[in-house]
Image: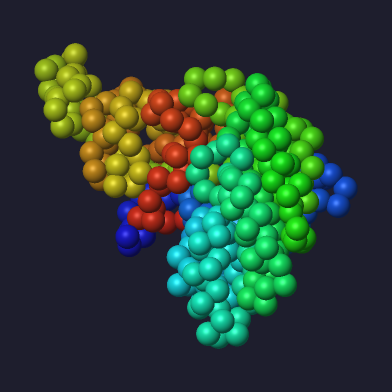
Length: 378
């Protein structure tokens, strides 16, 4: 999707907030721990390359992504530090990953056997991390027998370097830690079956680290908290207290492109889900669900100039409408997402309106919206 640079709408990313969040977490790490910054999904909508460079400069020693292509993008921009692909990559791309010094997640013995054929053909040695399904039900080893067989397969194997072993927590962001304890027990059971020695054992994510779950982990995979958002955030619930200060890094701004007065009985938007009760001023904002601004935003109050105004009518593909308190000039600034946690349009409140989490709101912001950066201060 082409960035719409000739339209007044943009995502503003404060890289100095990213820096502060990383440096705050560096102080929170246990002795000897390292941090790998999670920049998958275009750094949760913030821009992968800019965020990765900022995080590395601020103290992160590695990066995590979801796909091989995301890793290759970072390499193409000259980033040389460790990059781990957290998702499963087809074994036929094992040599491509090796050629670019990219570490891959492995979750089955079958994958290892298939990948070895490609690696043997090029006399290559691929860095891998053993993914463990300790209760997420997603990817990774979970059965003793297969895990032991994989260990035997990897022992003295010239085509694989076992760089790490990890799992992902399902409920580290919950006040109830019983399932976290269950996952730890399952992970530690498989760890006790190791006959090879991974360089890194890593379990900590943002939640486990900033909520002080006291998990023994060589690395913290620092994701949503790096962007200044609390990982415990769920629709219409209170956040858990973070051990570090979190500074939100993203705002979403636009401006009014059209203003008109409508009269009693006039409908607004598709389906006429809103009708004017009298003479009303309506402003149009050139953003819609094609930009990731969901139809469920109808009724949300956003900031127009210095006033919070409700979105009226259904959000269209490329535009939406707001009810103004008075006639306001075309070009008036509009703030769709604020970085102020007390504001009615802070991202948690936006997510609450959509009955979802802030992760989803940020990740859905499309590439049609240009990213504009405030540089970090080092």
